[in-house]
Length: 215
Image 1 (tube, one colour):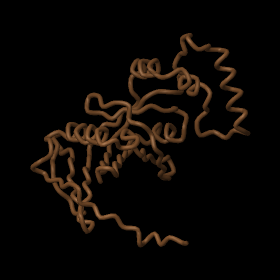
Image 2 (tube, rainbow, N blue to C red):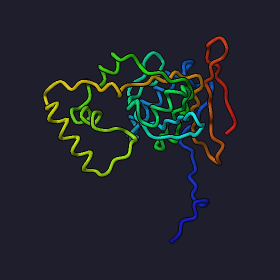
Image 3 (cartoon, rainbow, N blue to C red):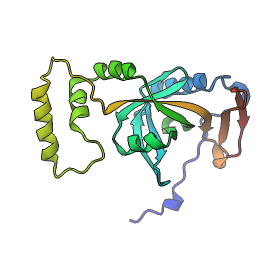
């Protein structure tokens, strides 16, 4: 039976959101929502959609994992020579989006991105499982390969070079990024598509303005 996508509807009604109830800091508000998502058992609660734009103006997006919130910045790690890494080498503005259907919530975040200090990338890389460290060396992310076997052969090569239990150094092409937000929107699903949307936006003085926008 063919499904009519236009007929798929979900009525949101579990919670509400108001300017008077949110934290003055969008980072604190985000941390509250993230903790509630984890407590609710949200699947991959730290997964976020990262949207970038290449030098030709072509947008692209993919799911990455949030690995920290430090100094009011959102931290994630990846291959610097991947599609997203090449985009961010020339276009330092980006957007991330979190969606937690279990709580009928999403958070949109826009801002500027820079690489984190190499020492921070070193520290996080050291904390990764052995297989993930080898994977960072093996994967020439986003590049064409002839077969799965090519990838598996490289795994064996690097396992021999860096046996389990030995020190696996961080590849120079792999590390972290920090997104500094200037716009954060908290979206709470409500009945009849009249959703609550509360925005935090940096003003000219570097202070957060909080306001409601139409659904």
